[in-house]
Length: 511
Image (tube, rainbow, N blue to C red; front, top):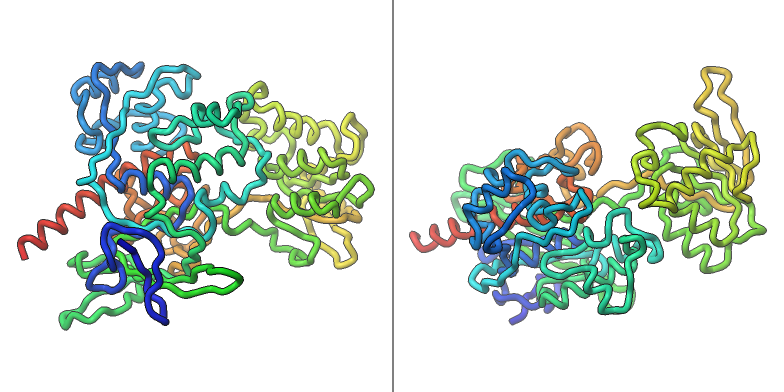
């Protein structure tokens, strides 16, 4: 059957669905719409399609407390257990108890470098399928499809995998090998696209769909649907609330076609790479100032930068900035690297990575330390400017930097001729389709949403917004920044949605 979306000119077939016409009108909404087709959205679609984790028989876990708990439920479906009880007391690299639980069951010795096998096995129960639609503005895989393909992941390659499809085995079948147990971003992006096909999830996905508006509707006593102007007020009868999702679809050529769909539940899984952070200084909108590493890659491929160019200015001291330095260095482009922190600042990410596991990033860190403006070093064509900030980009192609390590009048200013500047100081999610950019849903409603500093305020076990019932968030929006920990969030959302679905069905039977 065909799932169709409303347009002003009739209906357009978009994706297969188990329910024909669902979502076309408020009277027959889809159960779930997922916004975002990256690993979070893919994982949730897998679970909502009826796939379930089961504890294996005769399991053993190195954590004695968790070992005792799983002995009691060996062979049972995980979703039917008390997840809060199972996750109690677990510690690790995530603040989410469910993420820690599922990671501990999938990778019992994950943080120890061990090879203990997973305690989970996966089975599909068609009766557990919940109709849903995954909307993505680009190809399946989300932001991974837009990354420079030769970059290597920070996490281990096996930590990039999704349920029931070994990333290492998939690489071997393609004749590929992990580099120091890590994968290229191109491999990861291709794996996610293959995963959707291999698990027969493609009928749930619509790519090229840019969401521009999510409105909350409520039904009054006359049965009419009205727009809720202030989110977060809740509802005495949640069954009388719906979401209207609108946007535009990219069609053949450069045309766009509007769409609209109604849903009882919306899950935000957009990630945080949509809006590069900006310096907010004069001249930042000049044509030679860019904010993504993809811009640098395109310039290099077009041979618009080379050894004879004026220096490339790289602003930032994170891993993406380091990737830009390595990319430019391989092409012999002279580099001026400016960043606000001191090289040996303990919060600098390079000071937190094991040197043996991340040699390329420690090479950049060594460059940053060895080659300041005031001295020469072994890295030809590279100049490091720690404790510097950008004051202004000039139309003439010059840049003014200030030494922020000094005090008062001692802050020296320097001017450089540059060919191009690339500002890589982080990124933020694009939630412009929500009222006030989603601020009212964040931990601090007075500040913009930020994955690191101000994620959405969600329940730790259901991942439902504490401010707006029916709205969920996954991945970085909920504070889970690593693919390794996404599956726990998808499990929590699935558990919550299935309970609501059962309640909704029982209410309809009663009526």
